[in-house]
Image (cartoon, rainbow, N blue to C red; front, side):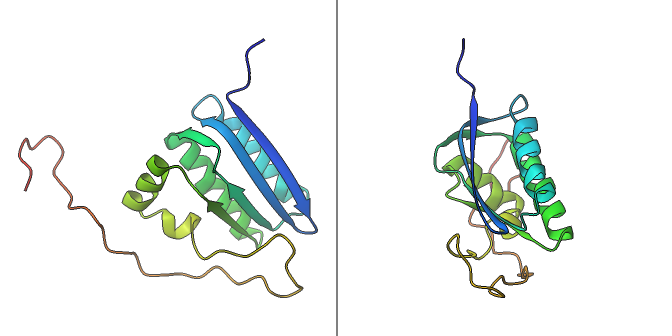
Length: 141
């Protein structure tokens, strides 16, 4: 029997969850991720911290799952934050500007005091670290 390509661990404390993902997040495993994050909301969780330390790969379907979950969590009055993304995902988050939505300020440890959950902040976009190049232009400027 083959090992699952994505393992999802969940640790709850009151209205907060720590989700630790291990393995690969791609088109095949993204539905598992999406279901796990949706389950948090249906269970009354409003603060979701996602630890990506053991993730070895994440494609755009994983990114879309995180963005969808962040939107749903925000609509429910909560917050979803990614922690320790792998370098490739961090680069995609930086290039797309999604890091502002998903990596925002840390919410803290898993046992918050009542009333210490900050409202999601809207921040101006960070300047790009790399220049943009026209796709297929053949010459870098």
